Image (cartoon, rainbow, N blue to C red; front, top):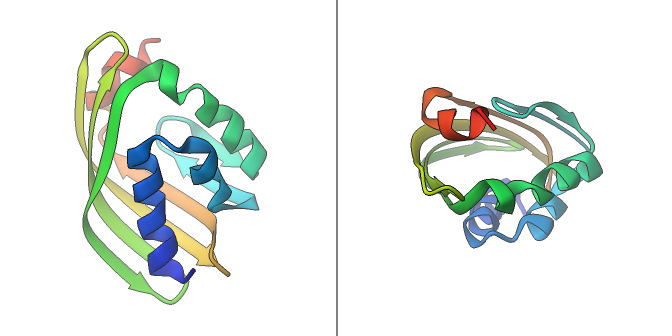
Length: 123
């Protein structure tokens, strides 16, 4: 897969809740700077982190609004629409930066306002 295909698949799998397959998109040595989870290195620690996702969110979609791809880099503006297992809703605009090498995500960072995520930050 090229960069665009990999990034598109990232959102498809996230929206399908296929977290194990989603983690497979990442390089084993991936680095992620995630606004809520912090700095995560390695695919297996990421996979372990994502195992808890269904206990946090009853519903989760991350819909791309604008994507720019150049070589091994991509920037995506997207919108998250989610609900916690307690029924609280979350709506947030997000920006993601990807670095993709040989079809695997090697680096991902995301940026968003943390206020919409208050229902899960207190847990």
